Image (cartoon, rainbow, N blue to C red; front, side, top):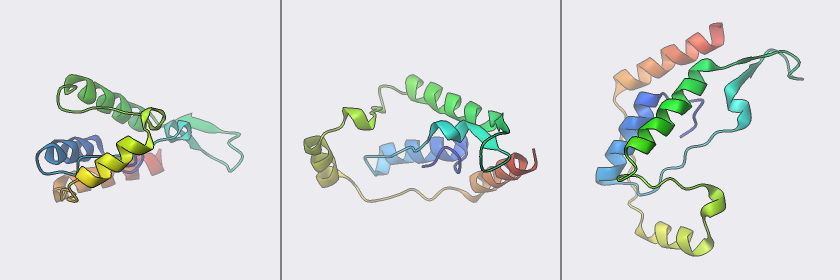
Amino acid sequence: MDINGVDFGEMKYVLNRAKIKGPRNITIVLHSFSFIKPYDVQYNEVRPRWNVIRRFERLCHFLKEKSDDFEVRTFDSLNQKILTQWAQESIHHFPRVPSNLSIMRGFQQLKDILI
């Protein structure tokens, strides 16, 4: 899930459903540039993307609260043995996100474009 393209409600829903039905591994993607919006290709003028920053903070808080349910790993902490084991054990199911959560994401993305 890309922190820029998925609303917190969607992330929370997918994580909670994945805990029950799989998949076992969820990757959340972000980059330091995820938190700024450039107004030109050279990044001479930028602004903070507060909605993405708050979304990431909420995700971190959620994962901390649910630390008994979710194990957070960075790419640096993974090795080939772990990845192979997880791939063999993984349940290949991805939860269908309710449309109301997707609509909310659309509004947030529109707001980000307009501001």
